[in-house]
Structures are given as structure tokens and as C-alpha cells.
Image (cartoon, rainbow, N blue to C red; front, top):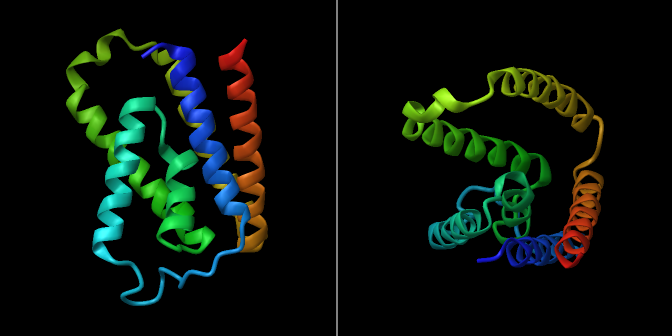
Length: 156
């Protein structure tokens, strides 16, 4: 598929996810025992995996909205669960591509990784000071902005 189409598709999915996150939820919290149905979790995971494979993105941009809107996770639980999903996916990718890492530019990767880890620690500290609903709205607004910028980029 052409890159502009993939970028526009991601922008549309991200905008939809952000819009759903901005709407008030009537669902039961997934942290309650038995609240998440296994079939729904499997379907959500498969759909997220398909989108990740097709669009080359997923991570927190799509996992967090899916966990919040489809599986009714509280925002903080969705962020932590998303990070675990990303970590497992990244480790699996690294293990399967381990033999091909010789062409990687470690002078770029190492500082990027180090500062990303520091940013994650700082983000966790800040998230502890923000309520779940405010964090959810902020995430949704940032996701909408990213979707808008990506759509403009795809159309120009």
C-alpha cells in the first residue's frame, strides 16, 4: 500500500480512538474480577495486532485506547498494561531479528533509548500526580493532534 494511504489510515484510526476516549464511559472497570471477557480480549488483541502489522504502529497510541474503550480499563492500568504489551512485543522482535542487528546505528539507538527510559521514569512520576480522567482526556487530545498532523502530512 502507498505510504500516504497508510498514514491516512493510521490518522483515521487514531482520531476514532481519541474520540471514543473523550466520550464518557459506561462500562464496568476491567480491574474488577471477571470484568473482561476472554473473547473480547482476544478479539481486541487480534485487531490491534492486525493494525500494528498493517500500519507499522500500535504501541501506546492504539493499545491504550483499545484497553480503555473496548476492555474498560482504568487509564493507569491501561498505560501499565500497554507498556507490558510493548515490552513483550519488542523483546520478541529483538529475538527474531537478533542476527540482523549488525547494521543498526548504535550511536543513535543508545542515546535515544537512554533518554526514552529517563522520560518514562519522569512520566510515571508525573502520572502519579494526575487523576485518571484528566490523564485520559489529555492522552485523547494529544492523540487527536497527532492524527491531525499525520493526516495533513498524508494529504500534502
